[in-house]
Amino acid sequence: MKFTDKLSAAWATNTSLLCVGLDPDVSRLPAHVRDQPDAIVRFCKGIIDATADLACAFKPQIAYFAALGAEAQLEAICAYLRERYPHIPLILDAKRGDIGATAHQYAREAYERYGADAVTINPYMGFDSVEPYLAWSDHGAIILCRTSNPGGSDLQFLQVDGKPLYQHVASLVADKWNRHGQCSLVVGATFPEELAQVRALVGDMPLLVPGVGAQGGDIEATVRSGKTAQGTGMMINSSRAILYAPPLAGEDYAAAARRVALETRDAINLYR
Amino acid sequence: MKFTDKLSAAWATNTSLLCVGLDPDVSRLPAHVRDQPDAIVRFCKGIIDATADLACAFKPQIAYFAALGAEAQLEAICAYLRERYPHIPLILDAKRGDIGATAHQYAREAYERYGADAVTINPYMGFDSVEPYLAWSDHGAIILCRTSNPGGSDLQFLQVDGKPLYQHVASLVADKWNRHGQCSLVVGATFPEELAQVRALVGDMPLLVPGVGAQGGDIEATVRSGKTAQGTGMMINSSRAILYAPPLAGEDYAAAARRVALETRDAINLYR
Image 1 (tube, each protein chain N blue to C red):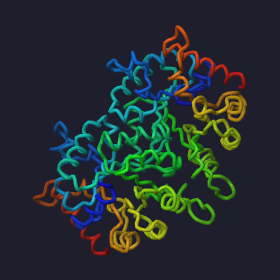
Image 2 (image 1 turned 45 degrees about the vertical axis):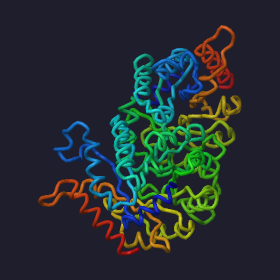
Image 3 (image 1 turned 30 degrees about the vertical axis):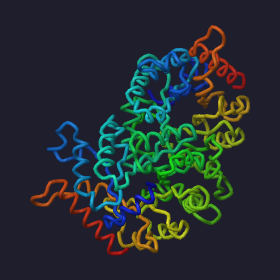
Image 4 (image 1 turned 60 degrees about the vertical axis):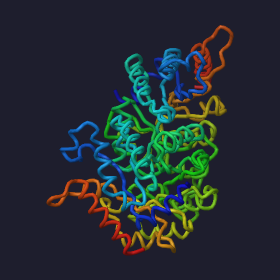
């Protein structure tokens, strides 16, 4: 099934625009999990099982695995997601960006090795650094446009023909690169007015929106700015606020994660 | 030792501006190597041993390992380089680009796990996506500026205040990001006049220059455009033209690689 179709189905099935980011920082895992072998896999499975009926996508961040030499654990988590929750899109957050032959290798990594439905990609090297990913016709390419970090403005806000660079990226992707409906964009929640400008440029293209939760983005403004006429079109990501939610009395980490994921999903749904 | 000092020493010791790229595509390995266990490690060690007195740096491309789940082989190759040729800088070509906490994980991957002296980084997300790498004060951050692929122009040639974006990146890095002399830039050999413009903007900053060899860049124009007043300042990369040099009668792949590396090094030195 095509990535966008799978995403649309997950939006409907779980009544959710919430993407749960899996950024397992070992130093922040609960002590009783951290000390076990396979701690990362165990922790992530706990988060996944607790939130799978609340999420429209899961998004593991490969850097947390690569720093530890834990690729086998990432493979195990991806396999678990595909087998147990095949209806929930799996997005590999890798932000790859390289030329043709090398991009092809990165596409194999994301789509074949990890079985991701979609992967995040950096646009700085241009279309021939994105095109190799599109050869996998059922898979999605999620291209950085306007990122939620403070330094995002260093390049993305430079003015090109009177418009900031990120708007040129949005138009390039929507008008030229997205030939077969495989592309999405990353647009941070920290700039709702910019999210609205991107939405106006790209029609119903799905947007991956980080910056809600730990990064402080405002949910109401984010949803109102980024949704489509159908009240969908977004994967609003929260990672740390869910993964490391402080447990209330009687909760373990998974129950705390579920509580925050439910609150976040429902807060999003208020404004759709 | 600082990356730039190690690089300067290697320029002098080997009278070389040649960077040997290690992009081991299994389908292109010699049949007698390909069929062996540990084929990638064996092949790369052969290339390294054959060219270590001709190179100013080695640059493994991580995508070729990641696609295969061959991180252990990359670790083995990097360990071999560090132990056998500790005076030759090891550059991990990863083109990472992500925000603070995640960038920190990628820096750990490059500098601690693989022991690289420097890593390539994408500037699209701005300074706070580069800054975490600079916390490792002896290591280098090699930032994409003007890339050698045709699509490189899609973004990098957009005009900002009458100058192409890549020149803004060059100035940002030279004037603001390079606070402690750790930064270098990637500038493709396919555009010598642009290489000269970058050189004029960045003083003696080292430039990693891909695009010679299989990608067709002209060596004379590249060296004349990119060198510093001292006749150094460049890591001119060749990967496929060396790795997959067709052997002449009596040569194995390593001897063929050595021959092409020697020719390339000497061709570069003609114009320094």
